Length: 221
Image 1 (cartoon, rainbow, N blue to C red):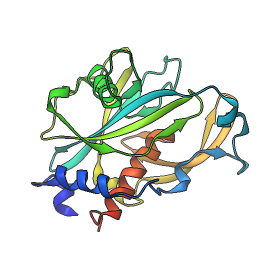
Image 2 (cartoon, one colour):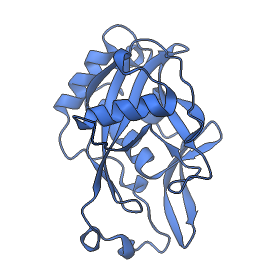
Image 3 (spheres, rainbow, N blue to C red):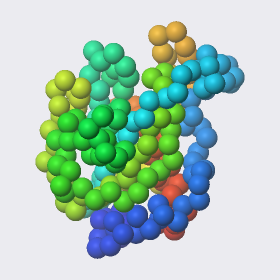
Image 4 (cartoon, rainbow, N blue to C red):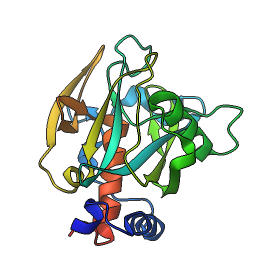
């Protein structure tokens, strides 16, 4: 594990192999799925009552930084109409110009944090995640960048960029169970706490899936 986490030679191939071999659906920790604070399901967001979800993609990029593999996250501006102030992976809705879902992830990462698609190697995907509040079907792409890129937050959407060391996902050091207050709903879920921000919802579930895949492949021992 240590060699992979430090970004030593062959780490990208090892992650790609783990994604290909992972059983589907990926069995990640259920606590990261938000639930009503009473412990019941959130009935108003039952999928059968909503129109077909919109396709979207997100990019979980891995690169070595300060001697260990790192993942860039975005803190969304508080004035945005959806998911304001939340911590996300770079991503968004598919555009008519995107030929593939991977193109969507790469385009959004370039627009939001200035990550050059030319230096990104897509390694594979995790399971799709449905986001009820915005009715997106989100496909997470895992990717590798050989060295730490120069990243710049796009002012219109991204207030800040937070780097998360991969090693923190393979234990419970930054996991908490918390209440999450939405405008008209109180939720409870496991979250990650890092660098003064709270990571929850689809982003936390995506990160937890990656951890499950790596541990299942023996890369977390």
